[in-house]
Length: 159
Image: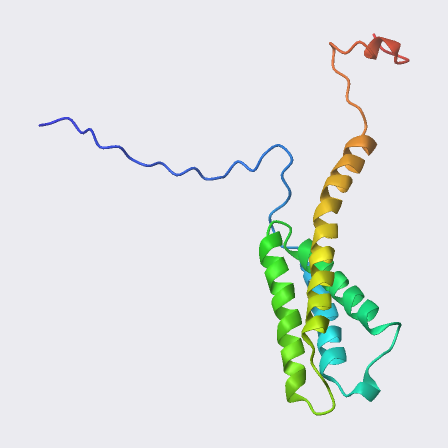
């Protein structure tokens, strides 16, 4: 009987994600917030102009709404930033195109670009906040001393 020389692939049950890895599971509360923000954006985008809320300049409203949507979606799916950017931009362009079907509303490519940039900056802000949160957690956690630590001798009650 000949000796078996075939190579077998043994998949690992987990993937190494680096020293500073984040939780990969979607956040349900953040998803709820993202859906609520998305519903408000859909209403404000497709409703008649008389029912639309006015909080400031038109471009500032668009940018701010999609900034919040991008941040909420990025917190919902922390390890899918590229997918979130494309989803927010796709939503912006689709809703702007949907305005062509509603009488009394006008669609402009520049408006869709402002919305997409707001979403992109929202995702960027959420992704960069992970590093800041990690540093805050690292600074605020209590120090642990071991028997080889030189500062342990300075602690009161140390043997």
